[in-house]
Length: 265
Image 1 (spheres, rainbow, N blue to C red):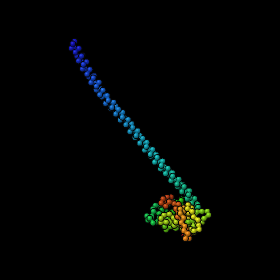
Image 2: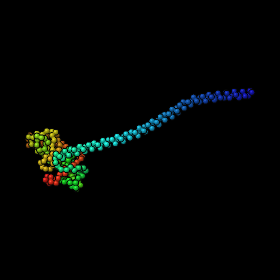
Image 3: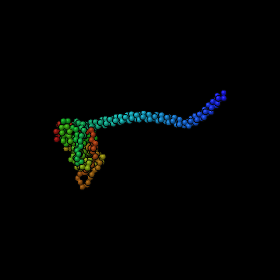
Image 4: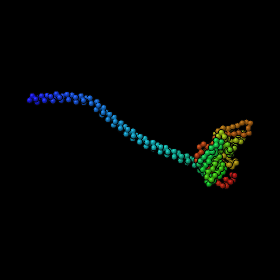
């Protein structure tokens, strides 16, 4: 009996320190458990954030593609609007000038010399283009065909120093005429204008029927400066070309009927 009681007492005394050790261990490990648990939660949160960022990136790419598509569509519609505007203006120009058919042409080369203002277009004799024909944009005259080949032609721009055409002031109460030449410095110079004629900046200059080199009524440009000297017989006018010679787009050759073309020669 005493032996049994002794064993029970021994077990009690042995379990008590074990419980204390377990309690101490639990207290020591509890912060670690919380830390690990928090770390796991943070990792899960980070994974969720990364997933959402990936979804946002994909959506952003889709939106960007859609924006690019819409921008391309806007550009296409703008080009169509410009083409329609050009065609309307060209039809009006053709009716005013009665110069013949309009043959679309494309600029394919520029003369490399800084002293020559000439271009090459992708139309030639096989298309009905001949020397002396006029090249225009919807804004106005650009130049004349200097040499027509079978499939391409060289065009001398009106801004070239060797270019010379007749022009007049577009005004209901004025018939002022003169010779329009290209300038080495750029732009145009209208010469041989009598001193007693009144010129104003901003007035529009159009082609004249004199000389027969170009059809009448094509817009050349606007007067930007009047040069007058009392000792001179004539005055001069600097003209800004209506067509931008550095950005020639949507070109057209005025293909005159054979009878008109032969008569102009």
